[in-house]
Amino acid sequence: MTAARKTLEHAYGFDDVAIVPGAVTTNPELVEPRLTLGERSFELPILASAMDAVVDPAFAITYSKLGGLAVLNLDGLQTRYDNPDELLDRIASATLAESTAIIQRVYQQPVREDLIARRVDEIKRGGGVPVVSTTPQNTKRFAPIAAEAGAAYVVVQSTVTTARHVSRSLRGLQLDELVRQLPVPVLVGNTVDYDATLELMETGVHGVLVGVGPGAACTSREVLGVGIPQITATVDTAYARDMYFERTGRYVPIITDGGFRTGGDVAKAFAAGADAIMIGSPFAGTEEAPGRGYHWGMATPNAELPRGTRVHIGRNHSLHQLLFGPTSRTDGTENLVGALRTSMATCGAQTIRDFHRTRMVVAPSIKTEGKIYQLAQSRPRD
Image (tube, rainbow, N blue to C red; front, side):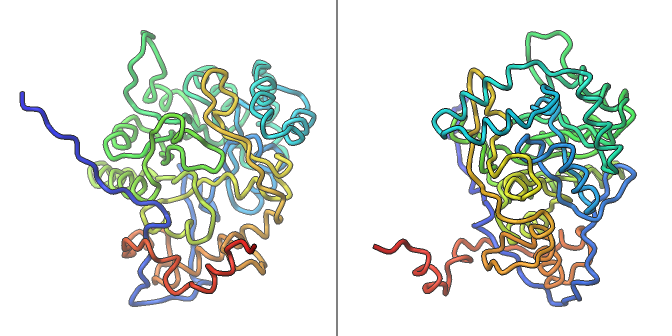
């Protein structure tokens, strides 16, 4: 057998690419960036991440009424404590040096099955759409409880999820069986490449989350060295979705998860092929979020190998302002839906699937070309 030299391909993130305007434009009022998941459609193709600093029942209710979906973390504080507010206060008031140890300590309390059902019921009774997330190792136990309580969707989520998993367990989580057994749609994540996505879709799942380690509070890329920049990950997984659709006639949405800062990032993810996106940090910076202006990753509580850190976001705006404006900020961090609509309209796209056909180019200078005065203003002064 002849040895083969390893080769490296170039991969692209949000700052490496640009969207090319279309030959035809349209009025932004005609743009409809809707998301269809299973048999239901939603006005906003933006999911709020299943993180304790982002989503609690109150946030999920509020965001549902705005037309979006907020995912509740079944492995988090909301299902470990009757009243998590004291713990959230403790995490927010800690110094950065001690914050990870405190997070690890408060997450040692076992998850209570009665609280899973209670939180789902709270969201449902408040007029929200209950969406829940759990790790693969807890899915068999938690997912049926949440579904019976009225959850609309179940998300199975870990740093990296594949359809084939090698372990000493004779009977691990079988995604195809889970899909058949649960009475609600199942979304799975996270993945970043064509082959893994195609195999996940073969199990019958109803959506795939894309992205390993791009989030502001995640350190998986530093700790484990794994991940692919989000534009390349989205392009590759969207290709798997399209090939699967051509072969089966079943369309499985791709949800790009993490790494978003601006409306431009949001638009680029959709142009690259996303059907929806999942956002954490921008939501954590809203007045309605439970994190008190802080945010931490889902793997931060891990006792052996924490892969997240607490970051200070600040309470910068209301949820409505983040999504719809009005805004005086010129950096694209508010009115994300307005930015998406305008970008789609500039390219002549009225739907997300229209936007998928938009041309993109590699353009590493897109944010600096001709911006000498802006860059000079952003430099610290002596």
